[in-house]
Image (cartoon, rainbow, N blue to C red; front, side, top):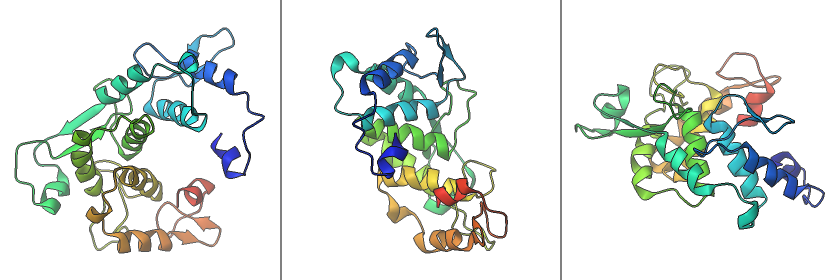
Length: 228
């Protein structure tokens, strides 16, 4: 759907009713979405907020949606809110960078899976906050701590990664996280917390002859070209 819009299509030939029906049938009662709907209607595949984000994005592209054609929006919102993780105490450089010296939460991230053993990262955080934004359900109390956590993912060092973003704790900087973290920051509008000049410089120096690499001086993939 997004590719059609980028190519200038008016979506008049899209089978809107069938697509919306597929979204409804792919949703679980808890609000999450299956990535695959088999021919017999059985839901298949692992649950992940990326699939929920895709469903919400398609719904947004096809808006306005009639109530009888719509997914269970309240269930989707509840599911996303249950994916929220509060980070406490000493958390790497975030506390040092922003001068936080409190036992209260210093950041909020969002799990890729609702279960507590799921992975929280820049990508899942983007999917959650962007989905809530498209649903008109992004609450003020969610945004400040999330901004702080996202901004704290920017690398501050004398290496070639200075200014780039890591996706999670103990994860090296990667061009793709400039998209995920930067996208979430764009939704939340806190660019005053981010050092833009070294970030842009890192993206510039990630270019290679064939395109863009995940970090400077490595090979290119179309995935990273798109992210930059």
